[in-house]
Each structure stands twice: as structure tokens, then as C-alpha cells.
Length: 127
Image (cartoon, rainbow, N blue to C red; front, top):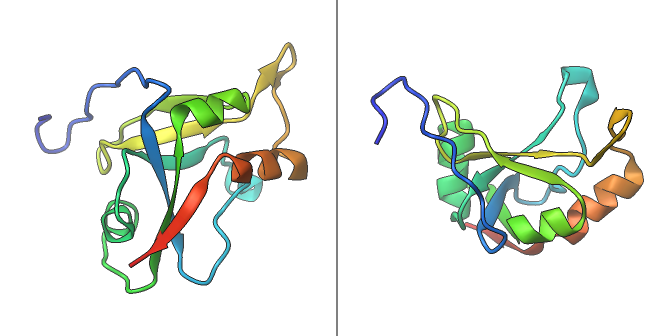
């Protein structure tokens, strides 16, 4: 276990590894980058986490409206997303999902890509 304030070691992610996306009950899950905030990746959580565990990792609180949905590394890779473990000081389980790239760099995260991202997920769960 890394010491407090340090960042966990980056793990190679196998295709069968489950991932969790945190969301809010009654709201759509995020499926696109917030370009106005400078985002270049979507954030997921390593492993299958309960909605409450996901909320604690993301918001550091335990909101009653927590929700989560699930996918695997392999599902995202089949859709050409680049999936990387990217631990932070606050979240050793942080995973970055980047859009596919081509010779010009990262592709634009448009509505078709948002739909492709959504199709990678199965059941949503609420606490």
C-alpha cells in the first residue's frame, strides 16, 4: 500500500477486469468529455464497486443518490477506446478512458462516440 500522499503503482489492465462509472440516481451517466473543462479522458473506477463505494471515491461523501454502471476493459477496447490505469493521490483505483486515436491524434468525442461508450456498459445500480 502506498504511503499517504503518494500515488499507487500503475497496473496493466486485463480485458476481463470490471470497471465502474459513478453517477447520480435519476440522471444520465456521463458519456462525453466536458471539453469546456479541458477534459481529454473519461474517468472510471477499477473493479466492480457499489454505488456508495464509487461515490466515496469520487465525491468523498456518501450521497443517497449514488448510482453506478459497469463495463469491462475488454468491452471498451473492442470499441477502440484506450483504457489505462491512472491512479491519483486521492484515488488509487482511477482509470482513464481516452478516445480512439489516428495519425492526427485523438479523435473528436462526438455523439457517435458517446453512443459507442454507452453501449459498452451493462446494468446500472442504485444504492
